[in-house]
Image (cartoon, rainbow, N blue to C red):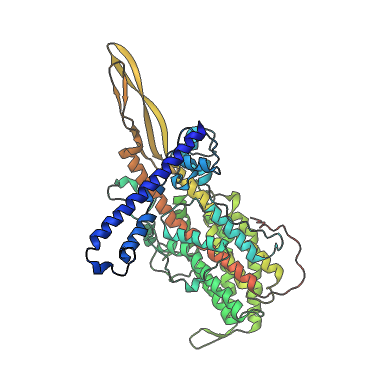
Length: 581
């Protein structure tokens, strides 16, 4: 019976093809008769048709779209699961299972309010509502496997490995922010060992990279998160500090390229080294009067005031109570590094020869080497301080809010030391590369963790309520859905709305009539507006926090290409990056 049924299917298909071909030929002949009324038009064609009609005939014979278009409907009873799509009969009769054109892409977006970790994917409801956790097709494609075990001290390999690791981490960072999208693209390119040249990148960083909310979003949608662009325009010192790391990272890339071009086997010229040291010291510890009027203009300790502007800004996007120990952090750590770096800069300046306008004309090698030696000591001390800024790998300490800035400062110091031939050994290069890549990982990891924690506070709580009904003295209840929309950021936001599903009491036997659910309600739309605002403003802040990471990875690659002193064979390693903080 099955065989006879299949035969009938094939015969019917063949009959359709024959009928279709006969119809096309008949139409062509009729059209040829109409278009070749003038005999001269068809002269020179053996079959009596013009070249135009020949072309039309071939086009029609090839145009089998109505027969070739997939009919995305299985033929019963051929498709009992599991379906073996390698079987030609199964492939034809079970297109829903076997034909790629019949498979709609999975909906890879979690439903709000269902997917608090850990997600129980064995529950049918959460399995459907949380595809990014439960649907294998929604999981990030595994980044290329980069094995550095054969050469565990090769910075280029470790840089590629780190880029692939971070590419995977940022896979689910969906955003309309063009700068973050660009960072993701750069990490992807670096994962495939393709490095762009920042000096050739003419694309300016965008200040406003996200679309504004629809005009019909209520005013209270813009609550519980500051307008980032407006905030930074009013707080110039905070804006300066947030962007200092990215700006100096590009300068550091250029400096390491200068080593490759002209100073591969010798130390940088003192004037060039000093120019870089002066630029990063001024960038991270600006002096009074170097910025437009801002809250720090008349501060007694200007460097402290400028760094102090970062904490109240970043903590607005972190769902954690910060320990508020900036004064202690500044006094015990940051002030010391500021003073030491300024001393190193000023000493080298005073011990050099100058042009009449005050700029350095030449720097004695002794002065240059002393500057490198003192910077090497600062770098070693910063290695000891680094764990403070990554404590517990979360954003609940004051120091963690400054991780990106501290990392940028330390990377600038290490890159300066690398300009010295005395300290450009295989061992020092490897440890510096390791520190830089560990900073890159920690900065991105903390940003993702803090961002996700903040967005989880904007949530929907699903519940039920009972509508009391009475018919002919009989009391009963009709259950309906109740959705609570809220933003619990730091327990102090207070944004919330509620939606109750419309429930009507009806006469027996119907009793209850349920209206539309809340997923199309005004409250849901208001919630979507608020969540979009919180997410977009947060991404405007995080774009500066992680903006230097691709450049840091590029610095590691440049270091690997420079000549170093081969003092001895490096010991064996595991091939994976080991971070001490």
